[in-house]
Length: 406
Image 1 (spheres, rainbow, N blue to C red):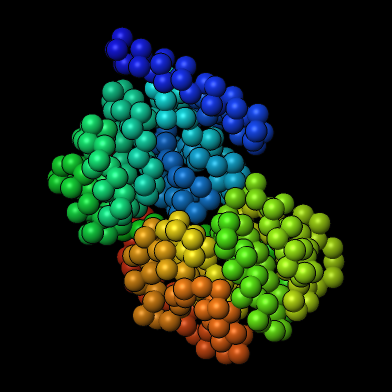
Image 2: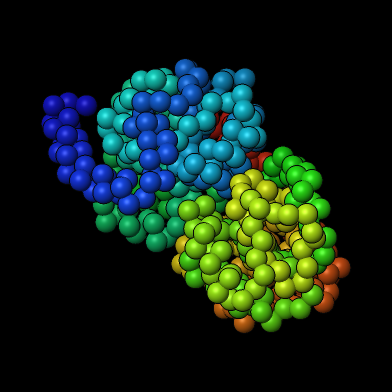
């Protein structure tokens, strides 16, 4: 980075400092891993392939790819503390840190420490300063399981001064679908650098870990799940649950910092509440709500559930991973906002493993149907899992794309 670049970076840092300090004061959780976000600390495996995913779902999807590339050496990063903990628990021998802030000084510090052989970005983690710094150091940047919605493309195209250089610096793009590939070409990535390699989230990952004995002991009866929920979706799930008889509910908010607020919401609805962190030994009973204030236990819970609502879809967040539950035999209910998972939805919807609803009333109806016909619901989930199996091997195609850049 030349003198002008350093001057701009200094101005940006100076301008952002008051806001950053205020954010740290108001939200102490942001202090966690601050040194890692500044690129100064974190486990390092120099010369490795650096694989980055935004959070829990992307890290889980990336693990099979990392295993395939392990002979080259791998290290991981993520934007969230929860994603970091899931990665460390799954493969403690692999270094995993929080990703650096997308500021030239932060990414330069991180790249100087890791000195990766390649930078692999999962899904839509397109960070301009990070990509530029890697490119300038001769580190090939590869996007895998790459998605670009029509809305995101419109936003990027309004920022051509940023998007055009970013697109030109991507060494290769492994797109989820042909539609994603076409959008990356519109963004400005040269066509010869784009392949359709598939969606890593569609493929079977590692078998879900067995539930901890204390958790397994309480999950005895019919069970419903509301997973990866955002503000507004817990209220909808609780309203739907109010019209359902004979089942307990597991409520799993997307962001850990919302656990306490969601607990108050359950209490305000007049429902008996138990938290995973203070579980107790008695089995859950009908009408009881278990707040899953832990990480990494959802796959095992999905395997016990009759039906699961996956959040980010009743509010406009684009939807979250709809595959994880179906893969272990649990049919899924989603709302109308599915831009992030449209390919998975298109595969699962014909099998009946995925039902779309518009509101809390629709969710309640879907849950009542699943509880009334559990064998039919399980059969739909099995049909969905078979559809996923036919989707192909995105791991091998993505790995070959990365290896071609080494």
